[in-house]
Length: 95
Image 1 (cartoon, rainbow, N blue to C red):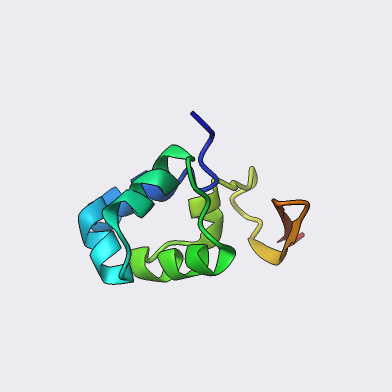
Image 2 (spheres, rainbow, N blue to C red; image 1 turned 135 degrees about the vertical axis):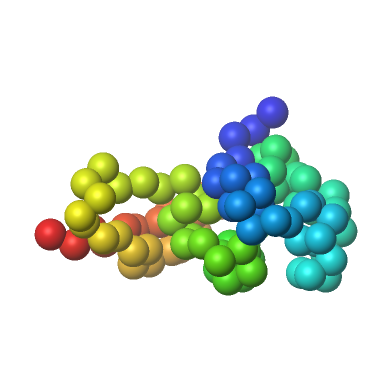
C-alpha cells in the first residue's frame, strides 16, 4: 500500500464530521475516489487539496501532514509544482 499524499485527511474529516460518503457527495465524486486518497492508491490534484481544506475548514499543510516544530512560527505553502510525476511543495516559514 502506498503512503497517502494527504495523511491528515482522515483526521480532518473526523474533526469536521464528514464521512467518505458525505465528502464525496459534496465534491461530486465517487466514494471510491475519497477512499483511494486515504489509502494512497490515488493522489488528489493540488487544486483538490485546496478544495478539501476549504470544505473541511483546515489548512492545506494539515492535510499534507506538514508540521512546524516551533508553534510561534507560521508557515505557508509558497509554491507547488509537478516535476517528473511528483509534486514538489515549497514551504515558507516566518522568522
